Length: 336
Image (cartoon, rainbow, N blue to C red):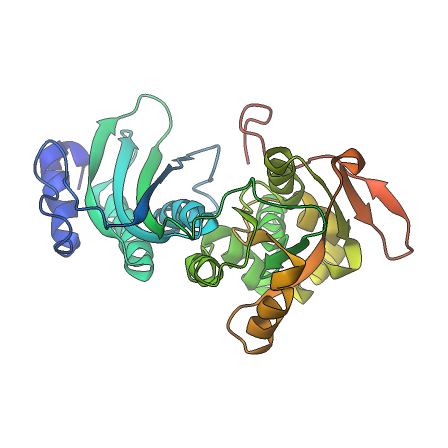
């Protein structure tokens, strides 16, 4: 079916029917000029928005509409996770072109519904517009965090340990495989990490509730780039240990096949959406116990250091070298 036959308000009705009624904390949801919510007492309201633009953030040849919908939710939930918050509500704005069909938008919202259901999000509304440029989807996610548990990028201190959840570089390697036209079946995990990333909101809440991180950020643009934001906000330097970086066996095999260095994907590849956080030595044992008990999958990769050393990488040989930010910058690079 052509979207012009359905029309803007027909599409909105179609979307609204897909989602369950919001929670009792939403006295007014979809259907009016704005939604109304009841903020929880003693909590900060967190707000974030991140867009996915066709030809910049995704290629239709590499991702389905379901995957784009799911990913659009996860990249925004990841920002809430980085603050230690719990995702609560979201809005979706679409820029539609003449190329999309009703069936494709249905698939898009199947992915959005899956992501929002997993994250416990209520849909509050959004906007549908015609785009004379590329197709885009722009969610806005609202979350909450107890005032005493919110984590920012600015709280790290010299001597804090640096930890990261999960593995690094998988998504960037998955995209590289797709772009090079290499058979991806043996590397399904890497491609899945690129197409359908998992935001670490459970881990973020667990860490915040335990009051463990002094600073935290999600890895959307690459380790070197995102750690650079923490260093700037905290006024510090850092040293990463190369042999401590968590690299999956799939990444190592893919890099070998492509003739590339897996370390480059881990340091400078984006879209992992893992959490990078600093931990005071007084909290280290508590965190390590949580890791040992299987409550969280995280690994120490380095330490916060004096500002004068900048960002350095300690190689297995013991040699230490300076590394520059090589992650994603939307204005310096035009396409992922």
